[in-house]
Structures are given as C-alpha cells and as structure tokens.
Amino acid sequence: MTPDVGRRFVDAIATRNWSALQALFAPEACFRALVPSRHPFREHHGPEAAVRQIEKWFRDGDVHELLESEVAQVQDRVRVRYLIRNHEPAGWHLVEQQAYITVGPDGVTACDLICSGFRPTDPPQQD
Image (cartoon, rainbow, N blue to C red):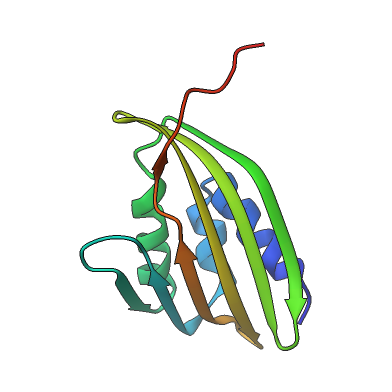
C-alpha cells in the first residue's frame, strides 16, 4: 500500500470528481464518519453509498477550494487530512476532514472519517 491512494482520494474530493473517488473504493468498502450534527454517526457500505455521502456534503458549493492537505502512512493505513473553503448559498465555510484508509487488493476497503463540520468564516481576501 502506498500513500498514492491517499493523494488520489484528496485530489478527487478537491476537484469534486466523484467518479474518480468511487473508483478508489473496493466493492465491499465500509465508510464510517463522525460529524457534528444531531445524528453524528454515518455508516455506508459499497463505493456508491460512500461517495454519495461525501458528495452530499460538498455538492451545494459554487466555490470549492483546497487550502491544505496532508497524506501519511500510519502502519497499515493511510491518513489523509484536508481543509476546504466552500461557498454555499448560506455563506462561506471552512471544513476540515481527516480519514484513515485501509487499502486492499481491490481498493479502499475501509474509510474512517471525522469532520469538523462546516464552520462559518469570512469571505477570502481579494488581492
């Protein structure tokens, strides 16, 4: 396993390339997420359901900008972290997510993600 899967994971989210993200997941993939909400735990099985959840978080933004990212090997898992600035009808937000990914022969078999939530922020500075 290499961190390359993690870089492709971040790139797919940064570019909102949902088909590329889905292609990273193995057919038996389990996606679990902890998010700040009334019902904080999400669990989905299979590539389509996993990506549908991630897409749901980011689909309403008309601006979607990757500000930071990091990918690292943690023994048998890959850790990815990314910070995204997103503009939606309700305003500007920052969202940080960190995930631990297990990769098998057919792709990502497990993805455990924690999310900061969409935190309101000021618009970016105009240069």
